[in-house]
Amino acid sequence: MPFGEIVCGSPGSGKSTYCYGKHQLFNAIQRPISIVNLDPANDSIPYPCAIDISDLITLKDVMDEYSLGPNGGMLYCMEYLEANYDWLEEKLKDLGKDAYVLFDLPGQVELSTNHDSLKNIIAKFSKSGFRLAAVHLCDAHYITDATKYVSVLLLSLRAMLHLELPHINVLSKVDLLKQYGDLDFNLDFYTEVQDLSYLENSLSSSLPSKFTALNMAMISLVEDFSLVGFETLAVEDKNSMLNLTRAIDRATGYVFVPPPNSKMPPEIVNPTDAAPDLRPNAYSLFSTAAGPARGPLADVRDVQERWIDERETYDAFEKKQWRQEGETVRDELARAGKPQ
Ligand SMILES: Nc1nc2c(ncn2[C@@H]2O[C@H](COP(=O)(O)OP(=O)(O)OP(=O)(O)O)[C@@H](O)[C@H]2O)c(=O)[nH]1
Ligand SMILES: [Mg+2]
Image (tube, rainbow, N blue to C red; front, side, top):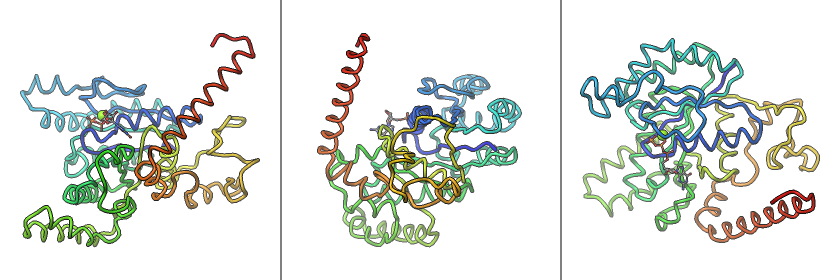
């Protein structure tokens, strides 16, 4: 059964970079992955592309031929893809029944909030057997301002209701948060979306009172649905990528069984050295996969410590580790008489 992720989110939220990062991570752990570029304006694709919508249609051709602007042209491209779904279906079949496919979408938010083509295409994926999750990236910069955070909450809720898939919202680029100054609350306040009434002070200090009331009304709408929450992502950080991968696997029900004799990074499976409660139970792989997340940066308070409170200390520590690893490799090469 093929599995996959619909990677969506606003322009520049980090979708293509995330796909590339995931490609590198999955190759390292020998887990299957194929990436489908569904952005017809993506002319500098960073990752190896299994299927590219540009082979079917490009935004530039549509804009030239029909005198459309970039937004109208993008919607046309998606409608064209929906009408020519056979093209995509044939190519997806070639990826095999055990494929794990990332669909890198364009940044136009209306595609995941109110336009029907993407939703119809997703329905066709599901009909052909795909188990999918929507991975909705939001730039973490938005949590630095209460009004922007409210807009992100609404956008995320709207995408969840529209796409009707198992849904993971992600605050991307958390590694940059520290440079935007102090947050009003700890990171877990923004990721857990528990008691948003605390936002009232921040909202009333930056807006006329009538807008504060409107914002508070929207907040209570988000709270009433009680659906929105966020994972975090710093794409260059392996632990961050592994934790997000785990959250997505739990949403889709994917259980990764490594190929026999494969060499795994120590953080993932270490059957001999790990404490018993950290070892996967070969007889209940699914319960292990669906169990509580453990390991580095699994808790959002650790993410806050890593990227906000103690960022310099961690950066210095990692730099030292990399230097030591480099020296070890160099020494080993020298001992083996190989060129460095
Ligand atoms: N520091 C940092 N930068 C990131 C991260 N993820 C993405 N970026 C940067 O954010 C910028 C936008 O990333 P893209 O991957 O092109 O974003 P996108 O969502 O694909 O953009 P569109 O396709 O235009 O909608 C790039 O400069 C990336 O290097 C991250 O986790 N940390
Ligand atoms: Mg992109």
